[in-house]
Length: 207
DNA sequence: CACCGGATTGGCT
DNA sequence: GCCAATCCGGTGT
Image (cartoon, rainbow, N blue to C red; front, side):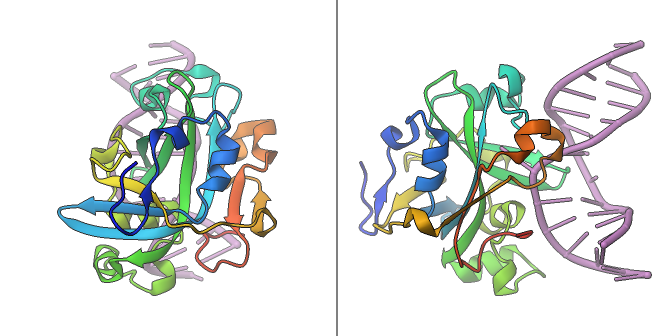
């Protein structure tokens, strides 16, 4: 366990847990950091979604489908899974569980914390504070997360890591709802695998 | 090798 | 509220 003086970097033990739904909720209130090009930025995780192969039809790895893209998800928990969505947006996921279990958590929204001015400049014309990190594509742009980070370790030795700063989210303050944009996933689309901090203004739209 | 469509966003009607 | 942007993964021929 590494400590930079601010918080504890989450260790492999945390990400290797088997219950991706529990980890998705435990990540709320944790701090996601990026250090790319020597610049540090961070935000508090306020919204997550779980994706769990093989049974989850919304997962890229549904049915344990192994391709060049999904290979990352079959690696041991504690690494980044990044992919390009709609040819434009990089979406950032945390891989969890043991090797060969393709579990992943999409980070959907952050409350900006460190390096807000840098994030604003990366967001260019969309620098309104409430548009900085209130969506999975937005937060990747703000933290400069690209395909370069796909497969990287989250242990603090690379560009992306997650810290525990002691903030605890009361389970009663977590909203559970269906995931966004997975209408194609048939019965899985109704599963309440989206988790948000109640009354937090930084979560993504739609509600 | 052609086709379909997406874990989104922002601009325009 | 509608829809284009823009690339490539996945599937089937």
